[in-house]
Image 1 (spheres, one colour):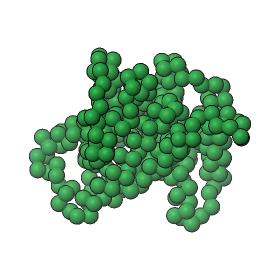
Image 2: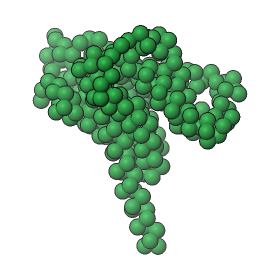
Image 3: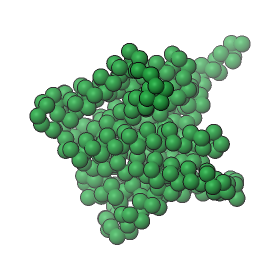
Image 4: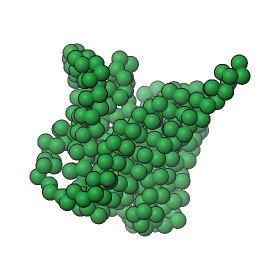
Length: 314
């Protein structure tokens, strides 16, 4: 009995640690994207199709070697094929592009925090679908989220914007696409592993975006720092972070994992400020704190209810 309790405790501790590490790697990925934009002249139109295609194909190769012909089973059913195309293009591709475009237009900390509005949007959508008014805690979360965005965008001055309108619009679109990315593939997730869907979704989204932006037409100096930052984004910030997060979900549950993964915007903000010298002011951190508090409130509510729902990360 004691040995079982000890194993359970160790499993929980391991789940917490790897979930936090996964969230930190997502934050590092955003900061490395900002580094490439600011210091190497890269554009999101080049970076995102490269990231999606390389990460997606690498994951897909794993399934091809593991399952051989089974890796292509999703294409044998018309409805599944159509839904994975929607997931790859309207979900993953748009989610990734708008997120990195927001970083390019502002910084990794701001982009990540704005994208973390997605659970609030999901909450509003669920209230609409269930035809009910928001509960008290949901109203509090909504007020905090709106106030946080107002402070980040205006620094409390209603007649001026301190980030560009393009950055704000892209950031809000990024949060909206996370809603689609989480809710659209739920039927598929009941029949296929999440990592398998992610592999196909990334590959599809990357190929389509490559056809739009034609990254082969860009020419950059591929020095060591460039390749290291790109490697972090593709391998640590995509495959490793997602694998760690999903393992954390298995060990501690999705609601608790979502709470610990909130280290992502914290990591992205700290790296933007300390490493990349982003010019944050105290009022920015107040706005960031309001949005992160919103996620913690909603996540804690799910945890108390034993709700298995959680926002799937990048």
